[in-house]
Image 1 (cartoon, one colour):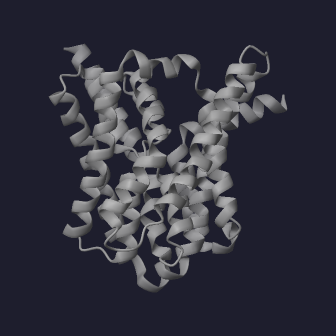
Image 2 (spheres, one colour):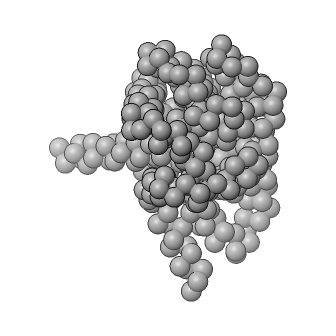
Length: 324
């Protein structure tokens, strides 16, 4: 009975991920000490748990997609690591962001695709196998691509510890995902394993909420001191970055001759970033610039909201087309 309740809570959290993250952010703003404990190594461990939950849901079949559809994955990875860093770099200069905020938005742009993009791809009748393949590929490439792209885009703002960033991403993404995949491969036939998997979405949302709560605790004093304008200005940049990612992702799929399902998937995969990873990296490597985590935290919440909205728009389009 207790297990059933926990499973229901997990499903509710997964279905209301953006609402949960926003609620935690608002609560933390008024009670900032609540998530003071989410700093440094604790934050890194929490992100590692999120990536572990991703690994627990991946199967060997998901990785076979990488071998079966190399050109699709190659096009998707190129779109991911070209469009979002370039758009971030452009917005940083158009909006004339101060160095700390610029670092944050550039970091979001240089990170791999978000874990929840797979769910959004499913909801909008996209190509889910392609979505999982893109997420796997961008995550595997992240230890190399994210430090390299940060060196290219943000090297003029601050000295980038590329080796340290490589090792950090390796520890908090590749190793937990690998452990999760190993456990899935080894114990997937056990009766209890599907039950464990059913709890992972809720655990992932809870961990992401803790990371966002920790960020709000960190930047609370700056937000209070500089008021609503700081938040709105940062949100405007995050909104433009995310929206242009969706549009240019769709355009890249169209140029590649993808069908509708794959165009929807590449749009979502490019637009939705692993902002949780960006948040941890900002807190670890740009601690002297505490506001760098603000665009990352806003992205954590907004990408989930916008992804849900976009999936809903695609669903409505399909319904209207079906009636005609």
